[in-house]
Length: 509
Image (tube, one colour):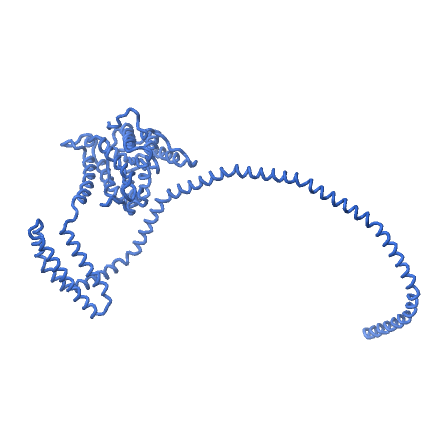
């Protein structure tokens, strides 16, 4: 059906294979299982299948506005290659459904394959779709440019698109829609407004790409089976094919005209004149808050400045006489009276501009809340778009932590075992030293007790003798003191009895 590689061996990009579950969470297979289940419950007219370019589309308003009303299913998985999509389609994602159109968008993640191999992988998916769904049209979305500036991956994607365009027969059931040319600026750069990471589309990027795709889908869905099979006069193809290739030609022609018609000398002169006029206008706008005398001086200066500009422009136009641009000189002469009119009405134009700006500010103020809500909505869209990337990064970080933990666990066990062995070894070596010190101390104490024992016995005898002598010498004095104290004790007892009796009489009274 499609022209392919000359070698008999299949392209490595055309070999079906599932994604290896390197993270261990089974997310890819869970998504595939969900898609197979959706095939049992839905009756889609349009099937979208591919990588993250398809997957993220359903998170934007463009999906709900343009594609969901067409009874569409979205079978996109981020990071998929042509091999992964082939495996999914061969394992249940085409069962029980008969869509009228299939939108295929895959290939930019085939980093290990060449442009030739990627193109063959995309065509292999298209062959499978046309064999399983013979009544359906297949739209292959061209690979988008990637990277802010031209780079080898962008060149590879462009080469894949060129190979697909050359190998797809016309007319035929498979169409190529290359909508990425409109995303490139004239200098070949990509805007962050269209691709937030210079690979995945923003809401604005999806809007630019989805409009021609929506038009093509509506055209196909409105065609009768006879119109799809029978090309019109001229053999160009069905109406949908004409629309598809016309869209591509219009984009190519627009960019060709931009490149083929650089601004000439007249346009440069006009740009210079406009720049000078804008400079004068900016000076006049900044002078709105100064006094009227200063404003009048600025206006007089502006008129002189414009007169000088007019004279210099006239000299420049005179140089065009006798050249191929002489007609522009005659045209410029007809515009000369308008310069004087512009100088005279400069103040009125400035005042009118100020009034219009004030009216514009008053008109914009009520819509401030609406603009704020729109910005919040766009922020939420960015969050939803970036969340899968953050989740993937977190998963990778967790995987690294678990890997590091697994690597450190044997080392920690080895350190613990070594420390226990070191403690036992240290204990074995230290215990003989401790026992030796204890034996030395015990021996020394016995020696000291043996040496001190005679002195203790001698001191004990001397102390006993001294106590006996003291008792004998103090006995006479003790008896004499007792005899002297007895009268005093009796007298003191009599006085206490008298005091007690007095207190008793007072209490009884």
